[in-house]
Image 1 (cartoon, one colour):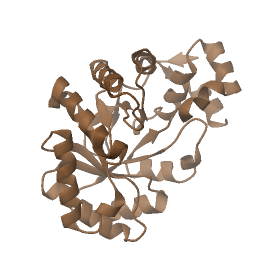
Image 2 (image 1 turned 90 degrees about the horizontal axis):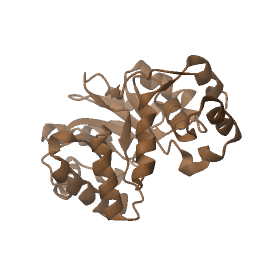
Image 3 (image 1 turned 90 degrees about the vertical axis):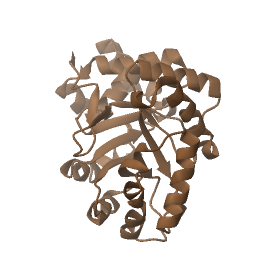
Image 4 (image 1 turned 180 degrees about the horizontal axis):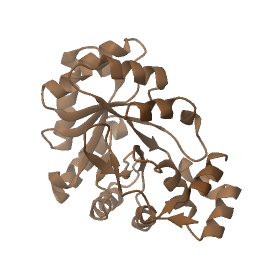
Amino acid sequence: MVEAVLSKRRSLGNTGETISAIALGTWGIRNENDAFTTLVKGVELGLNTIDTAEMYGSGRAEELVGRVVKHVGRDSVFLITKMLPDRLKSRYDVLKHGRAALRRLGVDEVDLYLIHWPNPTLSIQEQVKNFESLIDEGLTRYIGVSNFDESELVEAINSTKKADIVLNQVHYSVLRKEIEEALLPTALKHHVTIQAYTPLERGEVLRHPKLVEISTRINKPVVQIALNYVIREPYLAAVVKTENVKHLEEIAQTLEWGLTPDLIEVLRKL
């Protein structure tokens, strides 16, 4: 009931570049020493995309990631961070807060900068126009969004002048599939990568009877089954947060196998 996985990498929009199919998350860090050790180990295991945000720990997560990057080397990490939507009111504010984030990260530029969620007080067009200044000033190589629904994503795609929207980071899992109705097909149509956060539903997948039954039947951990579902296509990726090296190693082994089409259909109907 298992087959070879597509790849350990996933396409990043239309850039021709790839990111690790599973990225390392930094939301809600409890022990910075454990997190540091786990993040470094993750990079060593090939999960070399690290996701953070200025909101996480009020900047402390970016500082921690900066220490990890310094330890493993800048070229070893594809670095993603996210900007709070109230920073998007002007080009000046975007650049001011972008530069502050880069100082916390200890880098000259990030690989991908995301709008954390839409600012309801501004048009998408204005938000994207201001955010694009990060590209103009060399603070990031690529831009994207997070928590944008289908219409917001389309508007963002149509609002860029010099850069493409390459990724939308959203809540998605084998137990939460709302994006499959409209957002996912639209993103794939436009070659925008979908990166799923909370793909394990904070452990809820471990208690789902059908997932447990499938795990027993194919002799694979529930965690790997749940993750393989959300990364089953070339433009689908995931972010997983852990501070436990043993758990991280189980997560990394997800990329050693893949789901068969018939099992994907079973999971799609959960």
